[in-house]
Image (cartoon, rainbow, N blue to C red):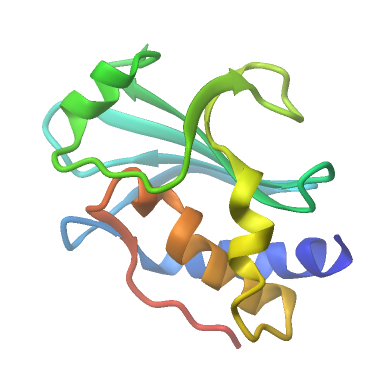
Length: 156
């Protein structure tokens, strides 16, 4: 947990510099870190897509968890069909569920962390920041939106 909290501001800085969608910069409308990272992103697309994102530490699963809400023209998307209509191909190799956010207690999409710890144990990681970058490559937003990637991931 301490490594997560210490690494979060540095990870946030990398996200601010390197998030792109279809090779175009993502507009960050709002951003802060407290005990979690919050981003409000506007995608460079015609149909006005905004994504709220949190990266937080889940004490039960002992790992980071990505939660997000998607809005099209200020309307929240709360069905899988709506999400699938946004992004083709939309792929997720991890369970995607709509549930109460474990910190904010509001309905958010979540890449469920049930297998995260076992999966991440295969990587030879020595710092919290390295862990976050490795975790993001599998459990970050590109797990749901393949066109939304972290262009440059510097661990220093």
